[in-house]
Length: 440
Image (cartoon, rainbow, N blue to C red; front, top):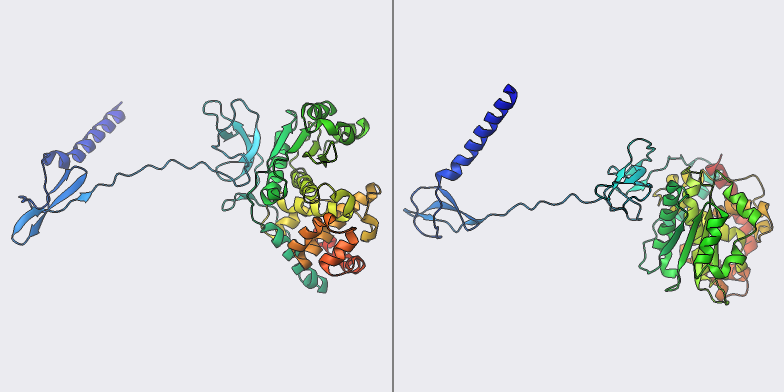
């Protein structure tokens, strides 16, 4: 009680002292230039502070200085350019947890506070990723890139040029927007990663999607939810039979507790594309935010871009190593909008680079699982080689080439000014080098 009494007395004294100067000067009318009595006296009148100054032998009031009232700026709500939920953002009342950024740009679980309906980090149960506070992007482990051998000196600049061109592509203005149909049992952490990565691709290439064509991406944990999503959507219902696959293949995907499996497809019930679709299949108990689960959103949405620029013809026109390689290339790079070659390679390092031939002639068509497994790894090396050597604009032109050329090899030679056979010879040692860099 004695402490509280002393505190109260101290406050009272402080208040009294602070009020004395104001009380000592009674309010009065002040006119600039009028005489005053006390030199350097100050009076506040009509939001101005007037001072008594000397003018010759007289004392007069000066013109007065306007009083600027301090404006309190509200604390800005953190935002993130790719739309990832962030602490302080509004959320839907009683909505489930999501993955996003806290106020220090750590990637954490966010809950929707019931008292203000804003995101807040869930106490405990946190596994934050490091995030660059300047960019808001997750920072991946850094890999050292060898530059000592003759191959390093030859190929490292090609890979770096490829990565830099893709990473520096600007956001575009477009009306394209993804409609996500999400199974409530789909792990929230994986949902957040897929949605964020898919939206990065749309931010870069949404202007290539024909106006008013919807993009529908289904995230499902059971065959029942997937089929119901198809049947309930006016666009997807027409492609139910052609894209749902066998019940055995779906069940295999839903029983996989380690990775998401996915596929992209055009929706064209009458031979004309009316929408684009992606289905992600995942076990409900797979909550591992591995790089693959995030990159798959960018990978499959890049397939949508390939379909859009070719009016749906890409998968029947371009070689498989290019289709899957380019999607894997963008999956690795846009998984988190990496900013350096080392960060992007760290993501690539989490992907399998299986043993097998580096001969792309065996990877031109879908001929089985051996083809496709190699097409992802060898293909991403090949598309990086093309981008680094010839530039992104020519690679994009090749992606669009189905409307202009009769076959992809003719298109390749016309656009890159060298025959496919020469490219195959050149790229094989680059593939071997890149494999050693990613997974030595």
